View (tube, rainbow, N blue to C red):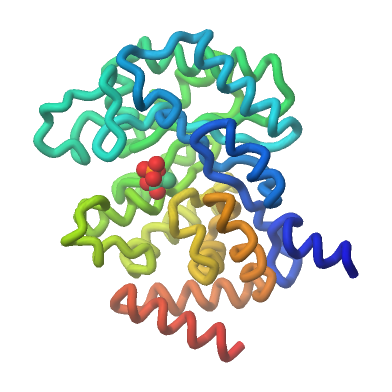
Length: 314
Ligand code: PEP
Ligand code: MG
């Protein structure tokens, strides 16, 4: 019984019917690896590489980057590690990648757009990742941030594969990508939904602006509908669909996201225990029913209330 308790507290994520839902960690540095593993992270679902270089005045070298990635991949030997290419711009500007004079940086040359405009930096990063991968035993996946077109997906996945990376995917954080997820998943090996930006761009509300903070609610049925589109495309193609935004850390919403087709959930390690416990309460059939309820609501408040009531009545 002690073993069972331990498993429930830190073991692999699963629904009540046994459906596996791997629970992964969001990290911004390899320093968090030990804590994430102690809390039962089954891998890393989002490694935010831009956090490593927020203070850098110039682009990091291949060697500098490789050392950081080796540390991370060694800590997660035998496990899946999803590393995101530099997501520079808007809330996370990097002086060597962004133009500080843009009037609307959230709609500007950010994420993959900024990397593409500075392709040597992207090539260096992917080269460093491939070199680190060759020396370590983790299962490395790479993904691009802020992808808004199929063409960008093709560009990134082709470059990553050309530079020696085996598994290349994209983040879905813009409505256009969610709506065309079936076409994006032709080229991408996987999709990972960033619900923070997806909510910001769906509701057209700056995620950092207090006066519009009430719009930044991933329970909004418009956001969930887009998540559902990606989930459908994932099921149809057999390709994984992860969630790595804050929404995955809300236990009941995590159940809804699985009902919408998410196959893995990634979150701050501190959220793992509560999400794991909640997932274990419901079957896939129940999660799917919760997703249907949330999708038919007219607001975030209604969606949350409807699912909360259904969960209490189950
Ligand atoms: C997101 O947008 O949901 C996401 C995970 O990326 P970030 O929060 O780093 O923009
Ligand atoms: Mg984002």
